[in-house]
Length: 637
Ligand code: C2E
Ligand code: CA
Ligand code: CA
Image (cartoon, rainbow, N blue to C red; front, side):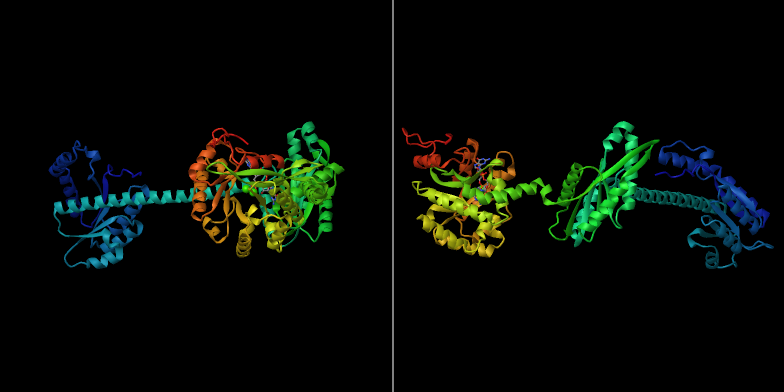
C-alpha cells in the first residue's frame, strides 16, 4: 500500500507567545537539539538499524519554527500553512497574550482551521484548568500541557513526540483515505460489473441488428405464456424474396430491410405482443387473442403492412412477408416448443401457397401427426389383413445355457412404410384403444405357439394401458383357458411405469396373476423411477435388466455398478435376473460372474421366425456339442 513519505521533510512548529524572550529560548532549545544530542541519536540509530547516520536534511526530527506574537496571527499562519500544503505538526501556545485573544481562544480557533495539529498549551501556575481548554479546542488526545518556565530538554522532547505522533496520524489518515478510495473504486467496479452483466444478459436475449428479443427470449416468453390460461397465438413470419435483396443489393441493404420490417411488426402487432427476430429473415410474434379468427385477422394486418416498397440506399425494393399461425390454449396441454413447430409448419404451407399470405395451422400440415393418424388407422386393419406377425427370442439359463423361454416380439409389415418397428408403432397404439386389439392378437398368437414348444414358457409384453385395462386378470385367464395353456407356461412382461402409477392396484393384480400360476417379469428394469426397495411388495418372478446397462457395462462404471446391484437385489428377493441385450462373449462372462441367472440377446439369437424358434426349443441347449455333451459359450443360435 502506498504511504506518503512525509518523514524526510522538517516538521513545522508554530510558537505563539507575546514575549520576545520566550521565542529566543525556543530558538535556543531547538538549536541545541542540532548539537550533541542529535549526534548521539544518530549514532544510536546507526547502531540499532545498521543504517548510516542520516544527513541533516533527511533527519526525521528536524524542525522548522514559525513565530507569532499574537493569537490571531497564529490562526492566520495555521490557515496559510494548510492552504500551502505545508501544515504545522504542532503549536506551542502561551496562555496569556495581552492585548489579543488568550491561549485558550487561540487554541480553539486553530483547531477550527486544522483538525490534525497537536496543540501544546504552555501555562503558568494559576491559569485555566486543562479540562476547560480541552473542551474548547479538543479532541483531548491532541492537546498537551507544559508548565512555564520550561526546560530545554522538556520542550524538545514534547516537540519530538508530538511531531512523531502527528506524522503517524497523517500516515494513518493517508492509508485510510487510500483504503476509502479503493473501496470506492471497488464499488465503481462492482457497479460496472453489474452493468456488464445486464448488458451481457441483454445481448444474450436480443438481436444485435434490430435490438429485438431473439429466439431464446421468444422461447422463454412462449414458455411463460403457455403456463397461463387463455388463448394465445404464435405467429412466425418470413420475408418474401429476402435472399434476392441480399444477393443483388448486398448485405447492408438486407440489414436495413430487416430493421425496417422489425419496426413495422413492432408498430402493427397487437398491444402487448412479443415481437422477436428468430434469425435471418424470420420473426416471431406472440399475442393473446380471442380465437382463431381474431388471430388470423391480426396476422393478416401485419402481413399487409409488410407488403410495400422500401427505400434501401437509393433502391426501391418491393418486399412482403408470409406468416404461419397457431392458436393454443395456455395452461392446458400446451408444449411451447410444439407451438413454435406448428407455427413453422403453417409458415411452410403459407410459403408454398404463394407470397404475402397467412396460414393457420391445421393437423394435416404435420407429417408427424399424419404419420400417427395413419399408424392408428392402419393398425386397426393390420390384424384383419394379416400384417402382424410374431418373432421369438430365446431366454437362456446362465449355467448350462438351456433355453428356458422365448420372448414374443411383434412385427408389422406395412404397405406404406415397409416393416415397422414395434418401438415406433407400439407407443402410438398405446395412446388409443388400438393397443388392446394388437395385444389380444399377440397374446392369442403366442398362446397358440406355446404348445409347439417342448417345455419352455412364452414371455409376452404388455404395455401400461393393457395392464390397466378393466378386468385384465379375467381376460388373461379366459385367454389361456380358451387356448388350453397352463398359466405357468406364460410370462407376463410389464414395465415399472405400468405398476407404479397405481402401485396398490398393481400389487393386487400381480398377486392374483401369480396365484393363478402366471410368471411375472419386470421389464426394462432400471430405466424407471422405482427404487429397488419398492419392488418388494410386488409378486414377481424375474427382473429384466434393461439392455442399455448391459451395453454400458464395459464402458461406464455406473452401468456395471447398476447391473451388479440389480443382480444382488434380485437374488436377495429370490428373483430370477434376466440380462437383456447380451451381444458379446465378454458380456456373457461378466454377467455370469456377476450372478445373472438368465441371459437374452443377439449373442445367442436374434428374435426369429416361429419355425426357427421351435428348432431352438427342441435343441434345448446353446452350444452343446452332442459328441461331448458339454455346454460351451460362443456359438450363435
Ligand atoms: P423390449 O420388451 O425391451 O424388447 C427387447 C427389444 O430388444 C426387442 O426389440 C429386441 O429385438 C431387442 N433386442 C434383443 N436382444 C438384443 C440385443 O442383443 N441387442 C440389441 N441392440 N437389441 C436386442 P423390438 O422387438 O424392436 O421391440 C421393441 C420394444 O417394443 C420391446 O422392447 C417392447 O417394449 C415393445 N414390444 C415388442 N413387442 C411387443 C408386444 O407384442 N406388445 C407390447 N405391448 N410391446 C411390444
Ligand atoms: Ca420385453
Ligand atoms: Ca426389455
